[in-house]
Length: 298
Image 1 (cartoon, rainbow, N blue to C red):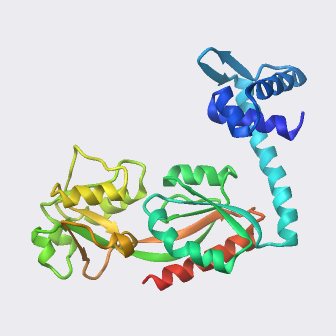
Image 2: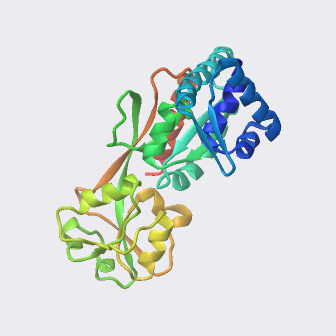
Image 3: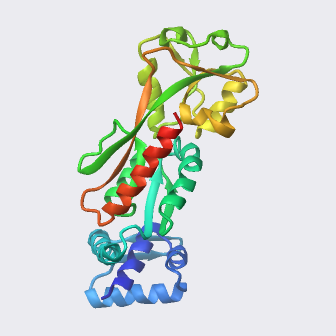
């Protein structure tokens, strides 16, 4: 048994398909299949149920994959620890952002990170909050950047920025004439929201729960850009994070964006990582660069 065979098994567990697992592992399908069989022979148990159109792990296979992930993470940590001891700000760092933040934050921070940390390669991902935290805890990510207020127990947390919410309305809407809006002004309006799984949906509902706002029951957006277009089409109003209303996103046809009067509703953006991470110096450097970029965006 070796680490390579365990990686093949984990890839098969992730994809439930020999061909996809082989592609993910950069080997041929016969090679991966043969190594899985050799691993089964070595352990003396069947790990995989092979069916014509489906691949499933056996019960013992599931339990072994759980341990294999830990073994592989420990092995990767050994490599990263050795690399970090030679040059803490080099190598790769796997960083994930939530979808309501990544497209708007990355253009601000990527040039800064490249300049400040030229030897550090960021592998960037985008996940909703739940999957992001799962992958972070499982060791598949090194750093997550998200909206705080969710369960981050067991993780190291650093607040980065308080991002104000703004109100997006159709250009001819009654609230477009206001310089700033109050939460009470939203009474009686139809609120367009993201689909379940996006933390911004829950945050918007929290902001509006004190007034009589009607959620559009027949519509759930998959992205902020879809929300933006639906508002511009006159189907309702929505809340947008401030970063999503700046730069190239500032101008949108038939759309008016207005700030809230004080107290301004907001969300707190933060960085989270495993306390046991061997990449702490690189994570600290990236977090500092994120804070600088966000501070400059105020």
